[in-house]
Image (tube, rainbow over the protein chains, first blue to last red):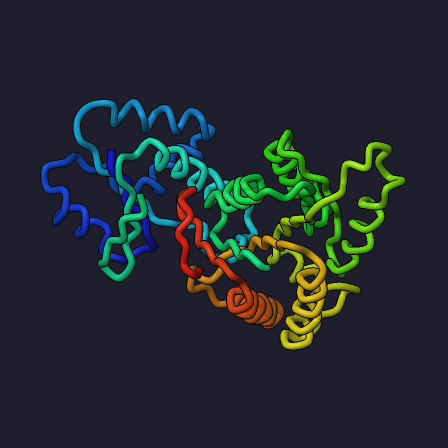
Length: 110
Length: 189
């Protein structure tokens, strides 16, 4: 599995399409996690759901980095950032390659 | 010597910082905690970090402000009478976590808002004092700069102060790391 992270509007999807044209994509992982949290799911459940989803075939996971801002006032927003971060750390550990995309340029960080 | 570790919320910067400290040969590991435990969420966070540190051999020092006062505490702990087996001889490494809390505590202390330059000067003075007396000082700070948000005057002053401090510490540091999804990227040193 390949993980691609970066800020919003950095060209992560284009980078993925160009470099891994034959893979399956799981895009906007951060929004998937948000929806699951809204439905009362917990970090561990969400992570296993993602892992189950990507169990077969070459997968590219794409997520915004959402933890690089001022700590939000709303509790839910803080939880979303924290849980997304933790899930991405777990996925990055299992990934064969990890990229951070800045201005369309992908840096291989693993 | 300063080692600076930077990253967003939930980036894994604390774990990396702890592992970094544990990989050094220093006998004495101090964890200089700067978070105020004023509500249940911060208490929970402190508990989480404590559990994460468990078994890694850290002695916890709590200084939400005036971090240079930790030096006197370290001296007291290092005094031979503190431990009968005098186990605290040898070099010291201090992990300060986290700069963003420290700056908030300093800036809004006594219910006032300190101006950003005075705040940065005060914090950097304390950090220099710590650095002068310690073998290695590992500082963790938070990237809170990439949401493009517009904030009130107090928050803006805080952002500026922390930004000045982060830049100065990165300048002073021998090594600087940015942690992304648990992966440390060395950006200096």
